[in-house]
Length: 110
Image 1 (cartoon, rainbow, N blue to C red):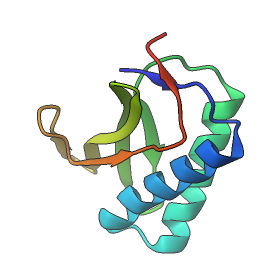
Image 2: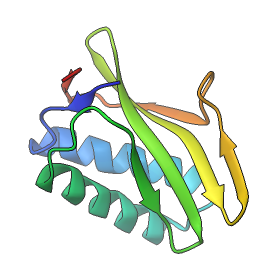
Image 3: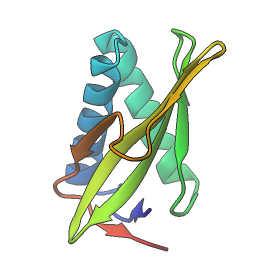
């Protein structure tokens, strides 16, 4: 598990927002909602230094999504590993639910 260290850089921020929005849209969130949630998540991640840990996004659909960033060699990867809606929860920490590379972003383990 890692954290993105250059999320304030425009190229990384744009990539992160786009990839996060793409994952949420593939999970069935409307595109306007997934874009807004991605922007809000990046604002939170740049405002607070949460370190290398999972983060959650609560969608208006009632679904909570759980993500983390991992470092694969010199690349960063955004990973959706869990979602919960009501009493139904699905977690896949072996093959993951969705992954998106984050070109232009730098990661660190601490």
